[in-house]
Length: 217
Image (tube, rainbow, N blue to C red):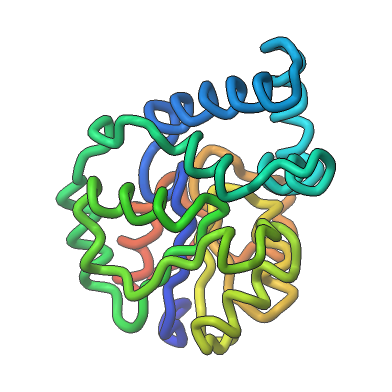
C-alpha cells in the first residue's frame, strides 16, 4: 500500500488546508500596504517587490528582512490582522484528517499565530500536534533546505516515514531530496511528472481519501 509506511503527515496551510483566495487576498493587501509604508514606495512598486521577494526568497518577509532590514516579527503581526471568519470548517476534511494514523504537523511559511488562528477557525486545532512556522526556521522559508532541516529536528521526524503535502511543487523538491514522500494537491500538475513528486490529487480531500483507501495515482 502506497501510504502504509507513513507515520507523520506534514501539511502546508494556505491553499492546502483551505482554499486561499478569501483570506490570502486580505493578507496580500496588508502586505502591500506595509511594504509601501515601510519603504516609502507607491502601491505598484510595493506589489512588485512583494511578488519578487516571494519568488526569489520563498516568502516576502524573508526578502524584506534580508534586503531592507524590516522587522519580520512586526511585519507578520501586521499582515495577519485579518478577518479569519471567512474560513469555515469542512466536516468531511476534518473527519478525514482525524482518521489518519500517526502524527499530524502543520508546516507553514506563515507565522505561528496565523497557523493557530486558521486551524482554530477551520475546526482543526485539536488534530495537529504542532505548528512549525517560519519563526521556527529563523525566517528561512520553504523551499530553502534549512526550513525542512529545522522541521525534522524540531519534530524529531524520520523523513522516510513522513508525507509532505503541498500546493506548490517547488516546495516538494527539497523535501523529496531529504527523504520525504511527497504529495501535490491543487490545480498545479506538472507534466511530465518530476521525480520528486510521488503523488498528486486535485484537492486535499481526494488525496486523503486515496491514502485512507490504500490507493495512489
